[in-house]
Length: 347
Length: 288
Image (cartoon, rainbow over all chains, first blue to last red; front, side, top):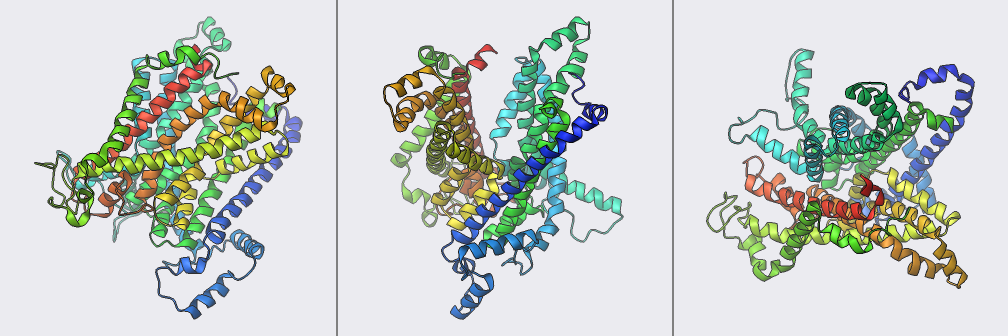
C-alpha cells in the first residue's frame, strides 16, 4: 500500500490495461467538464442578460444617454433579438474569446483580463504552495498525536483563522506593516500595486521589488486558507491510524517516524491532494478580497473595480473566466486522483 | 447508517458537558440578546451621520469607549447596531438556503429516477461554480442592498445541505418502517413530510448552524466589496467605510478592530455550536 504514489511505474508494467480504461475515463470527465462549462454559460447569461429587465438601461444608468443612443446601443448589443438567438450569440462570442467591451475602460474585456491574469496566478500560486506545505505538515503532526497539546493548539489556531474575514485580516496587516503601529516602523512593506511606480533597475531588482510587494497579500491569503489543509490532512491521518498495515509496520520494528512517513502519510495524502484542487473556489474568493485590500492588479481587483460602476460586461467576463478556471481545476483533480490512486484506476 | 438513533435522551446532557458547546452557545445567546435589545438604548439619532456629536475619528475616550468614526458617531453603538443587520442577513439567508437545500435533497432522495438524478446534476453544477464570483454577479445585477445580498448568499449556499439531506433521505427510506408506512397506504408527500423529514431534521439543524457562520462571513465580504446599502449600519459597511475612508491610512485601529473581532467571535460561536451538535449526532465521531 505504501507504494500508492508509484503509479506511473505500475502503468508501465500493465500498459494495455491502463490504456484501454484510461481513454473512456478521460472522455467521460472531459464531457462532464464541457457540460459544466455550458451550464455555467447559461447561468452567466441568465444573470447578466435575462435578469436585468432592460440591460441597456442598467448599463447606461450612470451616464446621460439620449433615446437615440439607447436604441443604437440596443441594436449593437443585440438586445432586440429573441432570447435563444442572443444566447447562441453569447456562447459563440465567449468561445471565440470575444467578451465584449468594458464600459469603464473603453477597451475589450478579453484584453483587460489577459493583462490581469498573471498577477492573480502569481498570488494564488505562491499562496497555495506555501499553505499546502504548511497545512499538510501541521495536519500530519496533529493527526498523528491527536489530542496532544500541539494538536489542540494548531486546531484552535486554524479554526480561529478560518473564522477571520480575509479582507479584515488584510486591512489589519496593512495598518501594522505599512502605516506602522507601536514598535513596528512605518512603511515596512509597500501599501499597494505590484511594483514601485517608476522603478528602474536590473531584472533582479525588479523581481525583488515584486516579491516585496507580494509578501503581505500572500501572507494574508496563506493565513486564511491553510486551515482547511490542516483539517483535511488531520482527519485523513486519523482515519489511517487504526489501519492494520500500520500495526504490521510497527511489528516489523520500524521507528514511529518511519511508520508515519513511509506508511501513513502516502495513504492519507490521497484525499488531501484532490481537496487542494477542489478548494480553488475558496482561494479565489480570498484572492478577490485580498487583491482589493492591497490594490494588487489581478482579476480580483478588476472584479472590485467593475463592481463600483457596475461595469456589467467586465463583471460577466471575470465571472466566466474565474468559473472556467474552477471547472478546469476540478477536471484536473479528477484526472490526478486517477493517476495517484491505483484503486480508482482498477475500477 | 443512522445519525439520529443514539442521540435522543442523553444528547442534551452531553451537549452541555462539552466546553466548546457551552462557549459557542453562550456567544450566540449573548449576541442575540444584544441585537434584540439594541433599540431600547440606541436612538436612531445616535446613528445619524448629520446629528453626530463626537470628534472625527477620535480615539477611545470619555463617552466614547471605542472612539468615533469619520462623521463622529460612537463606534460602540455602531458595532451593537451592526449586530442586528449582520445576524439578520445571515439567519434569513440561511433559512432560505435550508428550505431550498432540504426540499431539493428530499425530492432527490425520494424520487430516485430522472427527477432525483436531474436535481443532483443541478446541485453538482452549482457546487462546481465558485461561490463568491457568482454571489457578486447576482447581487450586482439585483442592485445594492440587503435584499439582493440575502438572495445571493442563499443561492450560493444551499448545495451542501441538499447533498447531506439526500444522503440521509436515502438511508432513512431504506429502513423497514418506511415500507410499513407505505403498506398502510401513505402517499409520497406523507412519506417525505411525516416520516423522512423528522428523521433528517437534526442533520438540517447542524448544517444550518454551520451555514449561518459562512453566511455571515459572506455578508460582510459582499458588503465590504460595496454591494451593501451604505446608509445601513452593519459590520461589513463599517469595515468598508474604514477602508474607503481615511481610517486605514490614519491608523484608526479602534474603528477597524471591533467589527472584525465581532465577526470572528460570532462565526466561531456558530461553528463551535454546530460542530458540537454534529459530534453528538454522529456515531462515527463518538468512537474517536
